[in-house]
Length: 123
Image (cartoon, rainbow, N blue to C red; front, side, top):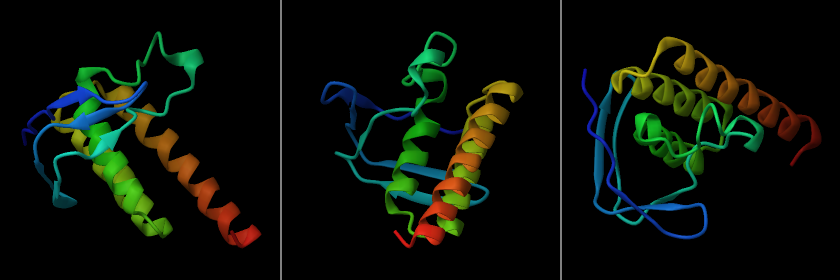
């Protein structure tokens, strides 16, 4: 499976805007992201930016897909799908296995805690 790359331009301080519609086809999901969608790249703590820059072209397309799906997510299942799409997109972009593992499990753990807190606190 091959995944084409997104075409983006800098938008705001730390954001990128999609310059054209972006269609992607993954085993878990096929979708289209409309031109103009904005992403801040990967939400990686600044401490790790020297290892994993938030807007590295190697995985930026996967991150844009993930941001798009997370923006629409309302349930834990929606976030699971977004995290799975991130993992599949990173694999399709030939990111190394360790990097895929770190990104997928970091996002999945964050979303698990976020959804649990939302449920417990009734937010």
